[in-house]
Amino acid sequence: MHSRSLCRTQMSAVPDHLMEVVFGQLRVSDCAACCCVSLELKALAQGTLSRRAAVCQDDLPLLASLQGPQLQANTDTVPLPDADTMAGIIRTIQYLPQGLQYVAHHCKHLEELSLRLSQVASSKRGGAWDHPSLHKRPHFKLSQFWSHCTSLQSLTLVNVPSRLLGMDDSSFQALAAQCPRLQHLCIGFEGSDESIYQADDYYCSVISDAALIEIAHNCHQLRSVELLRCNQITGQAIGQIARMCPGLVNFKLHNCPKVSERAIVQVFERCHELEVIDIVPARWHAAQDLLLWQTDGWGRWQLGFHALFTMAANCPNLRELTISEEHLEEAVVDSLGISTVLEGCRQLTKVAFTQLDIAENVFERMARKTTQLQVLQMQDSGLTDLALAAVVKGCQQLAYLSMQGPPLRPARPGSDPHPPLSAAGTVTDAGLKAVAAHCSMLKGLSITSESHS
Image 1 (cartoon, one colour):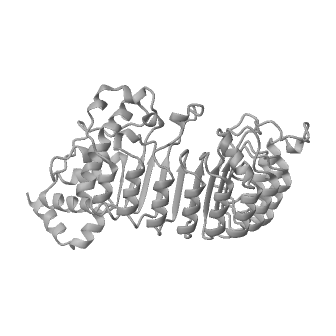
Image 2: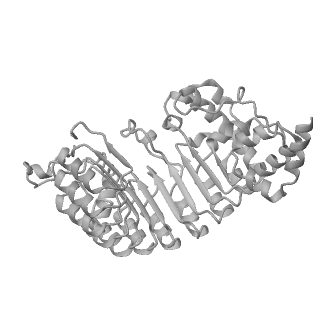
Protein backbone atom coordinates (compact mmCIF):
# COMPACT_ATOMS: atom_id res chain seq x y z
CA MET A 1 0.00 0.00 0.00
CA HIS A 2 2.86 2.32 0.83
CA SER A 3 4.45 1.82 -2.61
CA ARG A 4 1.14 2.54 -4.36
CA SER A 5 0.54 5.75 -2.47
CA LEU A 6 4.14 6.80 -3.13
CA CYS A 7 3.62 6.18 -6.87
CA ARG A 8 0.49 8.33 -6.86
CA THR A 9 2.35 11.09 -5.02
CA GLN A 10 5.20 11.04 -7.51
CA MET A 11 2.83 11.15 -10.48
CA SER A 12 0.82 14.00 -9.01
CA ALA A 13 4.03 16.00 -8.75
CA VAL A 14 4.43 15.93 -12.52
CA PRO A 15 2.74 18.92 -14.21
CA ASP A 16 -0.29 18.07 -16.32
CA HIS A 17 1.15 19.53 -19.52
CA LEU A 18 4.22 17.27 -19.22
CA MET A 19 2.03 14.21 -18.67
CA GLU A 20 0.08 15.15 -21.80
CA VAL A 21 3.33 15.27 -23.77
CA VAL A 22 4.33 11.82 -22.46
CA PHE A 23 0.95 10.29 -23.18
CA GLY A 24 0.93 11.89 -26.61
CA GLN A 25 3.75 9.50 -27.62
CA LEU A 26 1.69 6.39 -26.82
CA ARG A 27 -0.12 4.20 -29.30
CA VAL A 28 -3.84 3.58 -29.02
CA SER A 29 -3.18 0.13 -27.54
CA ASP A 30 -0.90 1.65 -24.88
CA CYS A 31 -3.58 4.20 -23.97
CA ALA A 32 -6.05 1.35 -23.61
CA ALA A 33 -3.73 -0.50 -21.24
CA CYS A 34 -3.21 2.65 -19.13
CA CYS A 35 -6.96 2.96 -18.64
CA CYS A 36 -6.93 -0.31 -16.69
CA VAL A 37 -4.33 0.90 -14.15
CA SER A 38 -6.00 3.74 -12.29
CA LEU A 39 -8.61 6.45 -12.62
CA GLU A 40 -5.90 9.11 -12.92
CA LEU A 41 -4.19 7.34 -15.82
CA LYS A 42 -7.55 6.62 -17.40
CA ALA A 43 -8.40 10.34 -17.46
CA LEU A 44 -5.02 11.18 -19.00
CA ALA A 45 -5.29 8.40 -21.62
CA GLN A 46 -8.79 9.41 -22.67
CA GLY A 47 -7.70 13.03 -22.97
CA THR A 48 -4.83 11.92 -25.18
CA LEU A 49 -7.18 9.93 -27.38
CA SER A 50 -9.44 12.93 -27.88
CA ARG A 51 -6.44 14.88 -29.18
CA ARG A 52 -5.18 12.02 -31.29
CA ALA A 53 -3.24 13.37 -34.28
CA ALA A 54 -2.79 10.16 -36.27
CA VAL A 55 -4.70 6.91 -36.73
CA CYS A 56 -3.86 3.88 -38.86
CA GLN A 57 -5.64 0.58 -39.44
CA ASP A 58 -3.77 -1.14 -36.60
CA ASP A 59 -5.61 1.13 -34.15
CA LEU A 60 -9.08 0.32 -35.43
CA PRO A 61 -9.68 -3.02 -33.64
CA LEU A 62 -9.27 -1.36 -30.24
CA LEU A 63 -11.23 1.73 -31.24
CA ALA A 64 -14.06 -0.40 -32.63
CA SER A 65 -14.34 -2.35 -29.37
CA LEU A 66 -14.93 0.72 -27.19
CA GLN A 67 -18.12 0.90 -25.18
CA GLY A 68 -19.13 4.51 -24.69
CA PRO A 69 -16.24 6.62 -23.40
CA GLN A 70 -14.38 3.69 -21.84
CA LEU A 71 -11.43 1.93 -23.39
CA GLN A 72 -11.12 -1.85 -23.22
CA ALA A 73 -7.66 -3.34 -23.66
CA ASN A 74 -8.49 -7.04 -23.84
CA THR A 75 -6.39 -7.95 -26.87
CA ASP A 76 -7.37 -11.59 -26.51
CA THR A 77 -10.89 -10.80 -27.66
CA VAL A 78 -9.84 -7.98 -29.99
CA PRO A 79 -6.71 -9.21 -31.84
CA LEU A 80 -4.87 -6.87 -34.17
CA PRO A 81 -5.43 -7.82 -37.81
CA ASP A 82 -2.75 -9.78 -39.61
CA ALA A 83 -2.71 -8.35 -43.14
CA ASP A 84 -0.94 -11.44 -44.49
CA THR A 85 -3.84 -13.82 -43.82
CA MET A 86 -7.34 -13.93 -45.21
CA ALA A 87 -8.76 -13.97 -41.67
CA GLY A 88 -6.77 -10.84 -40.86
CA ILE A 89 -8.05 -9.09 -43.97
CA ILE A 90 -11.66 -9.99 -43.13
CA ARG A 91 -11.17 -8.76 -39.56
CA THR A 92 -9.71 -5.47 -40.80
CA ILE A 93 -12.64 -4.92 -43.16
CA GLN A 94 -15.06 -5.67 -40.32
CA TYR A 95 -13.41 -3.15 -38.01
CA LEU A 96 -13.01 -0.30 -40.50
CA PRO A 97 -16.52 1.24 -40.30
CA GLN A 98 -16.79 0.82 -36.51
CA GLY A 99 -13.32 2.14 -35.81
CA LEU A 100 -13.67 5.13 -38.10
CA GLN A 101 -17.05 5.95 -36.63
CA TYR A 102 -15.55 6.05 -33.15
CA VAL A 103 -12.62 8.16 -34.36
CA ALA A 104 -14.98 10.60 -36.04
CA HIS A 105 -16.92 11.20 -32.82
CA HIS A 106 -14.07 11.17 -30.30
CA CYS A 107 -10.91 12.36 -32.10
CA LYS A 108 -12.01 15.84 -33.14
CA HIS A 109 -8.44 17.06 -33.60
CA LEU A 110 -7.32 14.22 -35.85
CA GLU A 111 -4.66 15.39 -38.31
CA GLU A 112 -3.61 12.15 -40.02
CA LEU A 113 -5.57 9.15 -41.23
CA SER A 114 -3.63 6.34 -42.93
CA LEU A 115 -5.28 3.15 -44.18
CA ARG A 116 -3.16 0.76 -46.28
CA LEU A 117 -4.86 -2.59 -46.70
CA SER A 118 -3.83 -5.72 -48.52
CA GLN A 119 -4.68 -5.75 -52.22
CA VAL A 120 -6.98 -8.71 -51.54
CA ALA A 121 -9.25 -6.33 -49.65
CA SER A 122 -9.76 -4.18 -52.75
CA SER A 123 -10.43 -7.07 -55.12
CA LYS A 124 -13.95 -7.15 -56.52
CA ARG A 125 -13.89 -10.87 -57.21
CA GLY A 126 -14.11 -13.49 -54.47
CA GLY A 127 -11.57 -13.62 -51.67
CA ALA A 128 -12.36 -11.72 -48.51
CA TRP A 129 -15.70 -10.40 -49.81
CA ASP A 130 -17.19 -13.89 -49.93
CA HIS A 131 -17.20 -14.05 -46.14
CA PRO A 132 -20.84 -14.02 -44.90
CA SER A 133 -20.14 -11.72 -41.95
CA LEU A 134 -19.30 -8.84 -44.26
CA HIS A 135 -22.85 -8.67 -45.61
CA LYS A 136 -24.01 -7.34 -42.21
CA ARG A 137 -21.31 -4.73 -41.71
CA PRO A 138 -22.33 -1.31 -40.30
CA HIS A 139 -22.93 1.41 -42.83
CA PHE A 140 -20.60 4.36 -42.34
CA LYS A 141 -19.53 6.76 -45.08
CA LEU A 142 -16.35 8.75 -45.27
CA SER A 143 -18.35 11.90 -45.96
CA GLN A 144 -19.60 11.64 -42.35
CA PHE A 145 -16.00 11.36 -41.17
CA TRP A 146 -14.87 14.64 -42.72
CA SER A 147 -17.64 16.63 -41.05
CA HIS A 148 -16.28 15.67 -37.62
CA CYS A 149 -12.50 15.71 -38.26
CA THR A 150 -12.11 19.08 -39.94
CA SER A 151 -8.47 19.45 -38.84
CA LEU A 152 -7.35 16.60 -41.10
CA GLN A 153 -4.05 17.36 -42.82
CA SER A 154 -2.93 13.98 -44.15
CA LEU A 155 -5.09 11.31 -45.81
CA THR A 156 -3.89 7.94 -47.14
CA LEU A 157 -6.40 5.45 -48.57
CA VAL A 158 -4.64 2.58 -50.34
CA ASN A 159 -6.48 -0.61 -51.35
CA VAL A 160 -9.54 0.52 -49.40
CA PRO A 161 -12.68 -0.95 -51.00
CA SER A 162 -15.17 1.72 -52.05
CA ARG A 163 -18.18 -0.44 -51.17
CA LEU A 164 -17.13 -0.52 -47.52
CA LEU A 165 -17.06 3.21 -46.78
CA GLY A 166 -19.18 4.62 -49.59
CA MET A 167 -16.25 6.24 -51.37
CA ASP A 168 -17.11 8.19 -54.51
CA ASP A 169 -16.69 11.66 -55.97
CA SER A 170 -19.21 13.18 -53.57
CA SER A 171 -17.29 11.94 -50.52
CA PHE A 172 -14.05 13.53 -51.77
CA GLN A 173 -15.86 16.74 -52.67
CA ALA A 174 -17.05 16.81 -49.08
CA LEU A 175 -13.42 16.31 -48.00
CA ALA A 176 -12.44 19.41 -49.99
CA ALA A 177 -15.18 21.46 -48.34
CA GLN A 178 -14.69 20.24 -44.77
CA CYS A 179 -10.87 19.87 -44.58
CA PRO A 180 -9.29 22.94 -46.23
CA ARG A 181 -5.99 22.40 -44.36
CA LEU A 182 -5.29 19.13 -46.16
CA GLN A 183 -1.60 18.87 -47.06
CA HIS A 184 -1.11 15.23 -48.10
CA LEU A 185 -3.39 13.08 -50.26
CA CYS A 186 -2.62 9.50 -51.27
CA ILE A 187 -5.29 7.36 -52.89
CA GLY A 188 -5.41 4.31 -55.13
CA PHE A 189 -4.39 0.69 -55.45
CA GLU A 190 -0.95 -0.87 -55.15
CA GLY A 191 0.61 -4.27 -54.52
CA SER A 192 0.58 -7.42 -56.58
CA ASP A 193 0.20 -6.97 -60.32
CA GLU A 194 -1.61 -10.26 -60.91
CA SER A 195 -4.73 -8.31 -61.88
CA ILE A 196 -2.99 -6.09 -64.44
CA TYR A 197 -5.18 -7.44 -67.26
CA GLN A 198 -8.37 -7.17 -65.19
CA ALA A 199 -9.11 -3.45 -65.24
CA ASP A 200 -11.87 -3.66 -62.61
CA ASP A 201 -9.45 -5.01 -60.01
CA TYR A 202 -6.28 -3.25 -61.16
CA TYR A 203 -7.54 0.33 -61.31
CA CYS A 204 -9.01 2.56 -58.63
CA SER A 205 -12.09 4.36 -59.95
CA VAL A 206 -13.50 5.94 -56.76
CA ILE A 207 -12.13 9.40 -57.56
CA SER A 208 -12.40 11.35 -60.80
CA ASP A 209 -11.55 14.81 -62.12
CA ALA A 210 -14.54 16.47 -60.47
CA ALA A 211 -13.40 15.55 -56.95
CA LEU A 212 -9.69 16.21 -57.49
CA ILE A 213 -10.41 19.64 -59.03
CA GLU A 214 -12.57 20.47 -56.02
CA ILE A 215 -9.70 19.50 -53.72
CA ALA A 216 -7.29 21.66 -55.74
CA HIS A 217 -9.60 24.69 -55.47
CA ASN A 218 -10.21 24.38 -51.73
CA CYS A 219 -7.01 22.88 -50.29
CA HIS A 220 -4.37 25.44 -51.23
CA GLN A 221 -1.95 24.09 -48.61
CA LEU A 222 -1.65 20.80 -50.49
CA ARG A 223 2.00 19.77 -50.53
CA SER A 224 1.87 16.10 -51.47
CA VAL A 225 -0.24 14.26 -54.07
CA GLU A 226 0.03 10.52 -54.69
CA LEU A 227 -2.29 8.89 -57.23
CA LEU A 228 -1.91 5.14 -57.63
CA ARG A 229 -3.59 3.43 -60.60
CA CYS A 230 -6.47 5.92 -60.78
CA ASN A 231 -8.08 5.41 -64.18
CA GLN A 232 -10.66 8.20 -63.87
CA ILE A 233 -8.14 11.00 -63.38
CA THR A 234 -7.19 12.94 -66.51
CA GLY A 235 -4.79 15.71 -67.35
CA GLN A 236 -7.44 18.33 -66.59
CA ALA A 237 -7.39 17.56 -62.88
CA ILE A 238 -3.59 17.32 -62.75
CA GLY A 239 -3.39 20.70 -64.47
CA GLN A 240 -5.65 22.22 -61.82
CA ILE A 241 -3.45 20.77 -59.08
CA ALA A 242 -0.44 22.42 -60.73
CA ARG A 243 -2.20 25.81 -61.02
CA MET A 244 -3.85 25.95 -57.60
CA CYS A 245 -1.16 24.23 -55.49
CA PRO A 246 2.22 25.59 -56.67
CA GLY A 247 3.81 24.69 -53.32
CA LEU A 248 3.69 20.99 -54.15
CA VAL A 249 6.72 19.13 -52.73
CA ASN A 250 5.86 15.50 -53.43
CA PHE A 251 4.32 14.27 -56.71
CA LYS A 252 3.68 10.57 -57.19
CA LEU A 253 1.84 9.20 -60.24
CA HIS A 254 1.59 5.45 -60.79
CA ASN A 255 -0.16 3.93 -63.80
CA CYS A 256 -2.83 6.57 -64.34
CA PRO A 257 -3.62 5.94 -68.04
CA LYS A 258 -5.66 9.07 -68.78
CA VAL A 259 -3.01 11.58 -67.68
CA SER A 260 -1.10 13.02 -70.63
CA GLU A 261 2.48 14.25 -70.81
CA ARG A 262 1.14 17.80 -71.17
CA ALA A 263 -0.39 17.66 -67.69
CA ILE A 264 2.83 16.36 -66.15
CA VAL A 265 4.75 19.15 -67.88
CA GLN A 266 2.38 21.66 -66.26
CA VAL A 267 3.23 20.26 -62.84
CA PHE A 268 6.95 20.64 -63.48
CA GLU A 269 6.46 24.15 -64.91
CA ARG A 270 4.47 25.53 -61.98
CA CYS A 271 5.64 23.55 -58.93
CA HIS A 272 9.22 24.75 -58.50
CA GLU A 273 9.49 23.45 -54.92
CA LEU A 274 9.22 19.78 -55.89
CA GLU A 275 11.60 17.60 -53.89
CA VAL A 276 10.19 14.11 -54.56
CA ILE A 277 9.03 12.82 -57.95
CA ASP A 278 7.90 9.21 -58.38
CA ILE A 279 6.38 8.24 -61.75
CA VAL A 280 5.39 4.92 -63.26
CA PRO A 281 4.21 5.62 -66.84
CA ALA A 282 0.93 3.89 -67.65
CA ARG A 283 0.19 1.22 -70.20
CA TRP A 284 -2.15 2.57 -72.89
CA HIS A 285 -5.49 0.90 -73.54
CA ALA A 286 -7.72 3.52 -75.18
CA ALA A 287 -6.95 4.22 -78.84
CA GLN A 288 -9.11 7.34 -78.79
CA ASP A 289 -6.96 8.83 -76.04
CA LEU A 290 -3.82 8.16 -78.09
CA LEU A 291 -5.36 9.87 -81.11
CA LEU A 292 -6.41 12.86 -78.99
CA TRP A 293 -2.95 13.39 -77.55
CA GLN A 294 -1.19 12.93 -80.87
CA THR A 295 -3.42 15.45 -82.63
CA ASP A 296 -2.91 17.84 -79.73
CA GLY A 297 0.79 17.96 -80.53
CA TRP A 298 1.96 15.79 -77.64
CA GLY A 299 3.58 12.39 -77.61
CA ARG A 300 1.83 9.21 -76.66
CA TRP A 301 3.96 8.71 -73.54
CA GLN A 302 3.58 10.39 -70.18
CA LEU A 303 7.28 10.86 -69.51
CA GLY A 304 8.95 11.70 -72.81
CA PHE A 305 11.90 14.03 -73.35
CA HIS A 306 9.70 17.15 -73.12
CA ALA A 307 8.60 16.26 -69.58
CA LEU A 308 12.11 15.33 -68.46
CA PHE A 309 13.56 18.54 -69.92
CA THR A 310 10.93 20.60 -68.10
CA MET A 311 11.72 18.76 -64.87
CA ALA A 312 15.42 19.56 -65.27
CA ALA A 313 14.74 23.23 -66.01
CA ASN A 314 12.23 23.94 -63.23
CA CYS A 315 12.94 21.59 -60.31
CA PRO A 316 16.38 22.54 -58.95
CA ASN A 317 15.44 21.38 -55.42
CA LEU A 318 14.63 17.82 -56.50
CA ARG A 319 16.08 15.33 -54.02
CA GLU A 320 14.40 12.01 -54.82
CA LEU A 321 13.66 10.72 -58.33
CA THR A 322 11.97 7.38 -58.96
CA ILE A 323 11.03 6.20 -62.47
CA SER A 324 9.81 2.74 -63.41
CA GLU A 325 8.93 1.41 -66.87
CA GLU A 326 7.73 -1.91 -65.54
CA HIS A 327 5.05 -3.57 -67.71
CA LEU A 328 5.59 -1.20 -70.66
CA GLU A 329 5.79 -2.88 -74.04
CA GLU A 330 8.60 -0.59 -75.20
CA ALA A 331 11.05 1.88 -73.73
CA VAL A 332 9.91 5.45 -73.11
CA VAL A 333 12.57 7.21 -71.05
CA ASP A 334 15.85 7.44 -72.94
CA SER A 335 19.42 8.21 -71.91
CA LEU A 336 19.27 11.78 -73.23
CA GLY A 337 16.30 12.60 -71.02
CA ILE A 338 17.93 11.14 -67.92
CA SER A 339 21.18 13.01 -68.68
CA THR A 340 19.23 16.26 -68.91
CA VAL A 341 17.63 15.66 -65.50
CA LEU A 342 21.01 14.91 -63.91
CA GLU A 343 22.37 18.12 -65.39
CA GLY A 344 19.58 20.30 -63.99
CA CYS A 345 18.80 18.56 -60.67
CA ARG A 346 22.12 18.47 -58.87
CA GLN A 347 20.66 18.21 -55.36
CA LEU A 348 19.55 14.61 -55.89
CA THR A 349 20.16 12.34 -52.90
CA LYS A 350 18.11 9.36 -54.11
CA VAL A 351 17.78 7.85 -57.59
CA ALA A 352 15.71 4.71 -58.25
CA PHE A 353 15.27 3.37 -61.80
CA THR A 354 13.41 0.23 -62.84
CA GLN A 355 13.72 -1.27 -66.33
CA LEU A 356 15.15 1.82 -68.00
CA ASP A 357 17.47 1.57 -71.02
CA ILE A 358 20.37 3.66 -69.74
CA ALA A 359 23.73 4.04 -71.48
CA GLU A 360 27.02 3.97 -69.59
CA ASN A 361 27.75 7.64 -70.22
CA VAL A 362 24.64 8.52 -68.18
CA PHE A 363 26.20 6.93 -65.11
CA GLU A 364 29.38 8.88 -65.74
CA ARG A 365 27.33 12.08 -65.80
CA MET A 366 25.61 10.98 -62.60
CA ALA A 367 29.00 10.65 -60.93
CA ARG A 368 30.00 14.19 -61.98
CA LYS A 369 26.73 16.03 -61.37
CA THR A 370 25.02 14.36 -58.39
CA THR A 371 27.87 14.20 -55.90
CA GLN A 372 25.41 14.31 -52.96
CA LEU A 373 23.79 11.01 -53.97
CA GLN A 374 23.14 8.77 -50.97
CA VAL A 375 20.71 6.14 -52.27
CA LEU A 376 20.98 4.37 -55.64
CA GLN A 377 18.49 1.68 -56.64
CA MET A 378 18.90 0.10 -60.07
CA GLN A 379 16.59 -2.68 -61.18
CA ASP A 380 17.03 -4.11 -64.69
CA SER A 381 18.49 -0.82 -65.89
CA GLY A 382 21.80 -1.68 -67.54
CA LEU A 383 24.22 -1.18 -64.64
CA THR A 384 27.69 -2.46 -65.60
CA ASP A 385 31.07 -2.70 -63.91
CA LEU A 386 32.32 0.45 -65.62
CA ALA A 387 29.13 2.37 -64.81
CA LEU A 388 29.14 1.26 -61.18
CA ALA A 389 32.81 2.16 -60.77
CA ALA A 390 32.16 5.65 -62.16
CA VAL A 391 29.24 6.25 -59.81
CA VAL A 392 30.98 5.10 -56.62
CA LYS A 393 34.08 7.17 -57.42
CA GLY A 394 32.06 10.35 -57.91
CA CYS A 395 29.34 9.81 -55.29
CA GLN A 396 31.35 9.07 -52.19
CA GLN A 397 28.45 9.88 -49.85
CA LEU A 398 26.61 6.80 -51.14
CA ALA A 399 25.01 5.03 -48.16
CA TYR A 400 22.58 2.55 -49.76
CA LEU A 401 23.10 0.63 -53.00
CA SER A 402 20.60 -1.82 -54.49
CA MET A 403 21.16 -3.72 -57.74
CA GLN A 404 18.95 -6.22 -59.53
CA GLY A 405 19.22 -8.00 -62.84
CA PRO A 406 19.90 -7.13 -66.50
CA PRO A 407 17.28 -5.50 -68.75
CA LEU A 408 14.46 -7.88 -69.57
CA ARG A 409 12.73 -5.74 -72.20
CA PRO A 410 13.59 -6.20 -75.91
CA ALA A 411 15.92 -3.65 -77.47
CA ARG A 412 14.51 -0.34 -78.68
CA PRO A 413 13.45 -0.26 -82.34
CA GLY A 414 16.42 0.53 -84.57
CA SER A 415 19.04 -0.12 -81.88
CA ASP A 416 22.02 -2.46 -82.23
CA PRO A 417 20.75 -6.05 -81.69
CA HIS A 418 24.18 -7.01 -80.35
CA PRO A 419 25.25 -4.35 -77.85
CA PRO A 420 28.81 -4.39 -76.55
CA LEU A 421 29.51 -6.32 -73.40
CA SER A 422 29.92 -3.12 -71.37
CA ALA A 423 26.24 -2.32 -71.98
CA ALA A 424 24.90 -5.78 -71.17
CA GLY A 425 23.83 -4.77 -67.68
CA THR A 426 25.93 -7.11 -65.53
CA VAL A 427 28.01 -6.45 -62.43
CA THR A 428 30.87 -8.75 -61.48
CA ASP A 429 33.47 -8.90 -58.72
CA ALA A 430 35.34 -6.02 -60.34
CA GLY A 431 32.39 -3.69 -59.81
CA LEU A 432 31.93 -4.80 -56.22
CA LYS A 433 35.63 -4.21 -55.54
CA ALA A 434 35.15 -0.63 -56.72
CA VAL A 435 32.27 -0.28 -54.26
CA ALA A 436 34.44 -1.58 -51.42
CA ALA A 437 37.29 0.76 -52.35
CA HIS A 438 35.31 4.00 -52.61
CA CYS A 439 32.12 3.71 -50.51
CA SER A 440 33.42 4.20 -46.97
CA MET A 441 29.99 5.50 -45.86
CA LEU A 442 28.02 2.54 -47.27
CA LYS A 443 25.42 1.23 -44.78
CA GLY A 444 23.38 -1.09 -46.98
CA LEU A 445 24.12 -3.24 -50.04
CA SER A 446 21.49 -5.35 -51.81
CA ILE A 447 22.17 -7.69 -54.75
CA THR A 448 19.11 -9.66 -55.74
CA SER A 449 19.82 -11.17 -59.13
CA GLU A 450 21.55 -14.38 -60.14
CA SER A 451 23.48 -12.45 -62.78
CA HIS A 452 25.42 -10.59 -60.08
CA SER A 453 28.45 -12.45 -58.82
